[in-house]
Length: 261
Image (cartoon, rainbow, N blue to C red; front, side, top):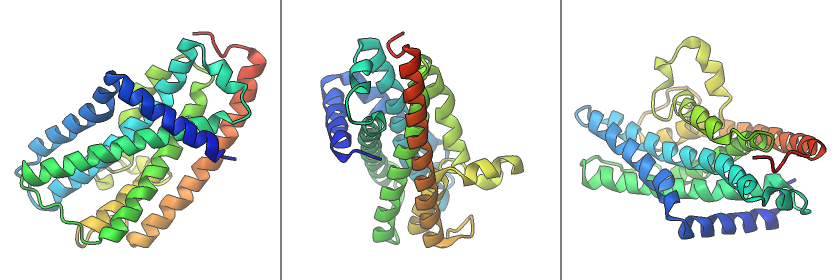
């Protein structure tokens, strides 16, 4: 179960770390923003919905980049500073702590997405009018939550490994591709489609595009179908993450290697 009190405390702590340590600004805000700006330069002559597609992809890119970074580096940072063992022996489950951290970093991704929208509108002259504002906000919240839960799944493995930075580098870009946030799924090989369909961000990004781009429905499930699948896959990944945290926490405590760095 998720301990809401511990999750809130972790979110607050992560926000304090962000403001007191300026280095977090680079991976959390600047890097995703630069990647999206480069994408807009590449597609600036395409026009129409393709540019809007790139803008939406940049928003998802920012949220996922921040989430996977927080779930990997935060536990590695605790291990390096000797605070991981103190967190592990508290009554609150570690999964709640990691979830709170992931939520904060996904929220930073939202700020990044807002900056991308503003630059696309005023610097590139891209019309970012949303055809269904309410549906867009709901889809955005569902996508943020789904990315946070996906970050929790990976975060569970960081408890038993010291190679969190390597995992972060390996896992970041494949999710961009497989979710269809940056590249349309139709251009991917057929064998990769099943992997895309089980990722919550795939359906969250689809719901965002349907609510924004007129006539868009590349996967043929409609807005409510995409939103429902986002919620369903998010719930499944949440259960998986809670099981993994319970199992791997127990294994790490038995081995007694938590603070080995």
